[in-house]
Amino acid sequence: MPELHVIDHPLIQHKLTVMRIKETSTAKFRLLLEEISMLMGYEVTRDMPLIKERIETPLMPMDAPMLEGKKVVVISILRAGDGILNGIMKLLPSARVGHIGLYRDHETLKPVEYYFKIPREMGDRDAIVVDPMLATGNSAIAAVERIKAAGPRSIKFCCLLAAPEGIEAFHKAHPDVPIYTAAVDERLNDKGYILPGLGDAGDRMFGTK
Image 1 (cartoon, rainbow, N blue to C red):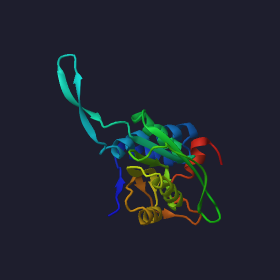
Image 2 (cartoon, rainbow, N blue to C red):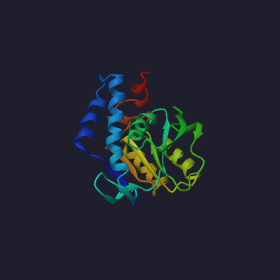
Image 3 (tube, rainbow, N blue to C red):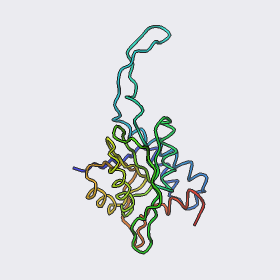
Image 4 (cartoon, rainbow, N blue to C red):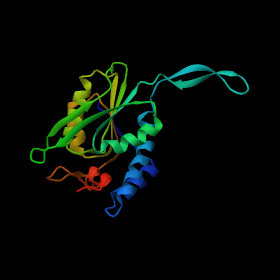
């Protein structure tokens, strides 16, 4: 069965509500997105493998848990994905970073790729793909399809908000990729925006229209 993880921690839900408010400033929106992304990162990375390493404390040696290598790559779907990327990178500062540039054709609602750059060796890496909104699902589906071609060890998709239509489409295309989100909203409008949503995440992050 496809996995859907709704991260309903009270701090995340409170911060998300403030982000939804239309009067919230660009600066505050960016800060809240980064804070939520850090909190969500705890859940997204919960199953990261650990190994035991011999260390010396000030008092004695011990076998202590350490992350098994530095094998994570965080891949941002431009441009709004960088808001989540910044938060997760504070948790995983040694992770590699990839970017995929997609924009949505407003006539067809289909994604158009204009940029793709990820680490060369992906076979032993776990990919976390980030984008604030899973609306129609088209961009996320296209991004994950491109990333799968590089052969990563695993893929997770992390977003701030998801629409039922996007979840259904994504799970149909990629049933093996779990979705992590802070909320599942009601539906999409006829322009492919999530309702009630929070508007265009990229515009609100960067102060554009």
